[in-house]
Length: 322
Image 1 (cartoon, one colour):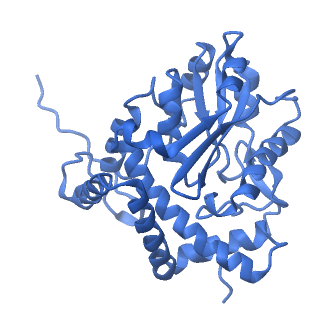
Image 2 (image 1 turned 90 degrees about the horizontal axis):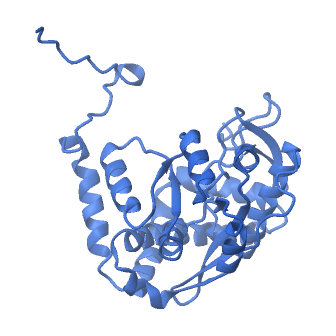
């Protein structure tokens, strides 16, 4: 038998080597160190973590001008009716919220639920049960809030058939940890590009968490208004609902004063999908807008939500002048 050599991995962009496969490789030691620190921080009480998150958020606001520019641009476009001073206050509040979200993620990943129970409330589970009554699967529409990790942990406790959808990261070590921790306590994890698996899970009567509110370019998207701005919006939500017959139940998680999270499920969307992709995309965006208006600092403004423009000649709004 021939002793075949393993195929060489192609170089990355600009001739750089691709990241190693082995998560024990020294290249991933900083990731493991960061995850270890987060796990230690998860031992702290939630109120203490909240105060640390506030301080860390303001530090990041001062130290990462590139991300600050993205948030500032998003707020200028989406909250044009606010004054510059109001948007600047929201900008700093968002960095605090995002930093809190990272530390809350540590609690969601590693703290026992008994520690979290005094800090959250949940309402609207009856809407989920009503949507499931005919034996159908359900699409939980959960946009990208800074409370996503905590929301997933809470929902997984109350919905045994819960299947979150995740997007693999480029960091293999973080990916390994994410799959291991998010996968514990849920019925199963689904990759965001595994459409057959998602449809199969919905047709089996399970609950799938889907977050469609990011800019993935033009493919599979249309432009629909979001906060008054045309935004590239995935049509996949309507396609999944139409193909699987699964109703769409909006899910929100809001961080309230006093280190408290409130999870809210709404009634399933009626008449969705309508068969009109533009109308359906606009409706999904309106559902998200309602929660953004309630707690604007808690939406994930760190993402370039408006980078793809309807006109190909339109300038990139995130490109700095000069």
